[in-house]
Image (tube, rainbow, N blue to C red; front, side, top):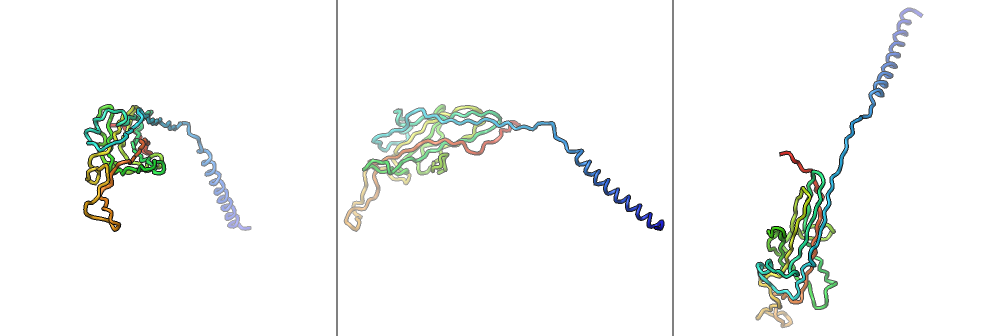
Length: 236
């Protein structure tokens, strides 16, 4: 073996040793810097509690007749309005949005014989802050209130939405009545009104307006917390 071949072998050995040392060095460096942190990072959730309380037996209008908005909102009979409250507890810097809905629960299958469902255009409602007596939702036709999906999955009508950031309680009063004028602008009639001249093919007079005698309508209030709770920023 000549000197040049010996030099090549020695150089090759050093190169292989260098690669081995590099790999070991890298592995050692990798494992040497694997370390578990000592600082704890923790999230504590806040507390959101929403309670709905009913304070009266509800609206029970028997043999109701059309009345003015003024008379409806000044009624003092306990069966002419419905009082309820919403209590909420908030712990932490969190805001909560809740919604007050009204749900039509009139069940045609349960209505007594000879009685039919009252058309919602012949109903008016109003929602007041029972603490201040301020009007939240003015006298409005039921048929004009915005439709929503309430918390029980049924179709409801949105009366009010409020964002709260501290623990408290809101007091409400609901009115519902038959107005003198319906949502179409017609005078509400207790009896059917027929044309005096126009007749059907069978000779009967054409029905111009259906009267509201022997009709009924029932609702429930539904409270739901919306799924949009958020942190409160106290920085001004």
